[in-house]
Length: 505
Image 1 (tube, rainbow, N blue to C red):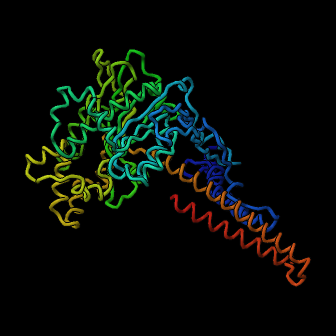
Image 2 (image 1 turned 30 degrees about the vertical axis):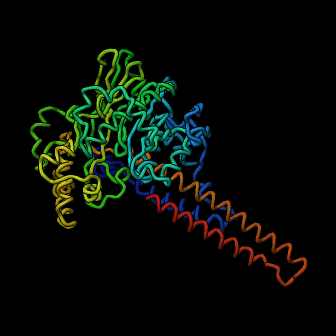
Image 3 (image 1 turned 180 degrees about the horizontal axis):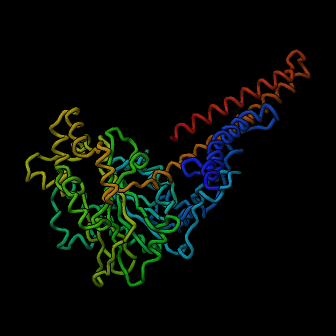
């Protein structure tokens, strides 16, 4: 009996199961072939809308329902628009996984309103994915203080049309408001005055954050975060991947929550889109085993100044309460009493720092600073920023690229595997999956729209032909000719769909 059972198993695996697994790709390939040819065999039109069902559902993602805030006299015209932003939902139809891609808001957190404040000079290529991602995890409002590229008409005009974005552009009115700031006259900020580059940015960030806190109170927000546009919040451990869930679960007596930062690890020197290409991260000291951290410290730093290339003290969220004020770019404080602060045990902020070679190469253009050690300290707060500026200012591009590979890029797979295994590194695919899913949704919507346009044009052409035959019989299209026209249009549709979808990969 035992031998009979052995004959029905392959390496301890049932033959029936093995045959089923082997046949599954064939069945799927056959089904795909059927979808391609059924138009010709049965006259059934195949389009992207037949394969994917797209529905509009405000609750498809946590945070996809955006409030239309009542405009005030000080709002710009764009800020007064109240059109709601909709997040389309992509659901595979007929696969049995209709619910698999739906991210439902966690129960009891719809009343928790969360906002993000940031000072940024990035373009739309970075800001738009950043906004979309954070909407998907439950952010209700974005307070953006524009500098450099963000302040240009091409970028600002787009951001100003978004009802969940308030944009402050450089202006005398903004300067005057900063000058009247309460923290401007406080001693803790004075050490950063009258210094260029990063120190000046640090001062602006704090002054801007004070304005954002006041605006958040007017907008009746519950929590505010201060992060940059090269950072993504990671609500690790939260049901439905919702930052609202994380913050709604915090006890009422907690005023601020620190999210330890994870730093991006690039594995090649030709990354162009970090949010979509980078999936490896260096975990924070607060989320790893202490002994492992110290025993592997030298392996991780690789002759760089510190464990992290840039900062290592995380970013925080704060409840909107009377007396709340900034306490630097990473923390909040209160005029009422010292805040009760906790650290998130699983959630973190993902920092995509120097993830592109251009981030290093262009560093020299972001500041005008002498290269002496003391001069660099006046310009840059962090050690690696000073080093990056000096290297980018003194090295030819080929030498700088090699330096970038040695200090930033991780190419040794065995070392990466070891550090992932001991918990210092982590693979995090969720932001990539969310953003690529959104890109696929948009591609399918574009394809569906063009599909409709082409169909309408075909109908118009056939109608014109049919009308013209009454006057010019020689112009009649035969049934075969009509079929050829239809086939040509459908072939164009398929080609267009393939091109659009290929752009999302």
